[in-house]
Image (cartoon, rainbow, N blue to C red; front, side, top):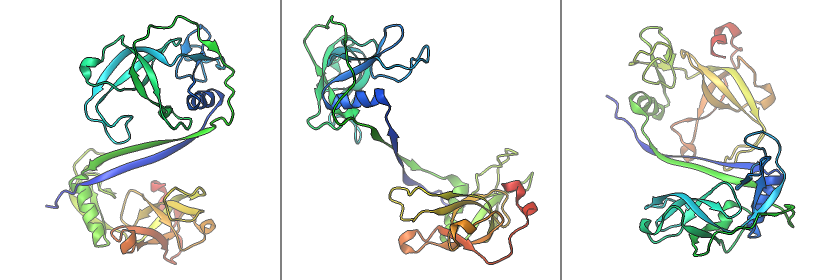
Length: 318
């Protein structure tokens, strides 16, 4: 039996987004130590602000300034902070309704222990020493002895010098991936520049990469079948935006490739041919990566020089 593999895996995607007038004003305000909310049609003050009324769906533009002090509405203790969390020492996650706001803002509370935190406690913002126009401009909340304010939130025009117009929101997931018996066999075969799938005992379809069970019949699969190495482009797209940290010049082609003998197309990059000459039915073969580019996996696929495959031979895999 093939040994089951296991390895750390990081999925990371820095999401870049532009900001509308409401979010731009809110984040720019944090840079200037000003907390802005937005007033809804029924007078509710939302902090953080949103661009559309959650009840009526009407566009919201009436900005108001709320206080930097507030009240904890609920909380949870975090005894073991993780990478990139607001504080390196144990802290409480808290929902804080700032004075003048109708809703609560989620952030960290710097407290010596869980016994020092309670619902209803008064807190205030501790501003970051360096502020750039992000939620991290609030370093955290800290305990505060003052009483709740009674003043109405003051109107604000949302105008600042050099407003923040876009942000990059990093998203990252670290975990240990165990591919299981079928995919472990698939990965080990790639080390020998072989591609294997598994055949369903009922419908006789060969799935690559193997899943350990037929997705159509729901029956366990064990019969290993070697496929390829050549295959057919079933469909493709032209990539015109360069990915960060990816050493591939645009434009390039990413395609679905039906390997000979497989009943499921897999993904691969097409090279060795001008991007505007790639087509459905193009016959391709793998080019395995060098030692510095993961020789256990195909780096890309290139044309074989064979005549294009007839559409009827791969139409079920498009």
